[in-house]
Image 1 (tube, helix red, strand yellow):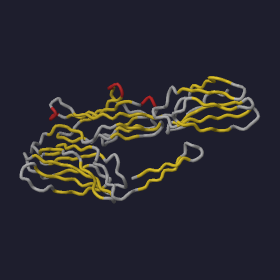
Image 2: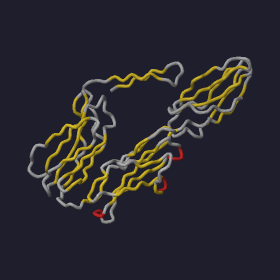
Image 3: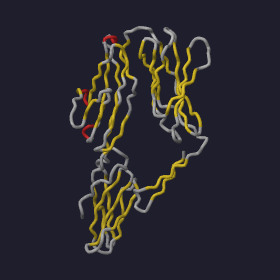
Image 4: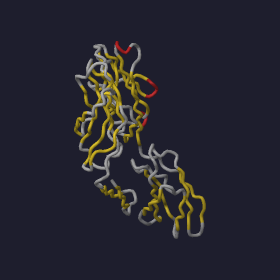
Length: 302
């Protein structure tokens, strides 16, 4: 897929054209793991590819035993699913699994190989089939952090928030019946690590855990604007950014007007740190910048 970006005159609004080039297959699913889910069953889970290069139409999951040298079995999985439980496995055999993603262009690259063995035991240590990830969410948005657990007896879950403190339900945090943690109407203070911990009697004191790193993106703070130099017909402005709001600076906006005139707007590139404003009459001006999340508050007027 090729992305063509066309900037409109207001600089920050862009038109994106996504051109899918058939023949470009998807990357491999980002990760894969195998967890024992029953005496003769294994739960295989994976993450979608980071770049699909098109619309995902499904996955292919491959399975084979290490011994025997047989061709792998193939199982086609719908695009909305990222887990599959292999059942009725032979006890004691080592099974290998790997996955590929599918688009209209064809089958993509494979994951690394994940291995698992069905033990036949009815007592199975707790394990997490989900994956810890880095999550970006806009302020006042919401995000769900899955924690799919397997094991016998039924695992117990607990969630730890930033600072390894136990999560308690409130207006911003809640744990669903399936064990997922939901962050709602998030604020910047909720940025940090959220860890799901599972255990059961079969774990023998050794729990399993995954960690999500959540970063809440907010509008940038007003830049610090200064007049570095003046002349008969110009003002040399400089600025610095103290808080970009958690995202990369996309550009700056300078607004200015004469005392009796209308406000004008000047878009400036993201790497700019100074600007020469040609003046004929006394200007009033204010300054702000965008980080791709929101356009921040302007500086004070001059």
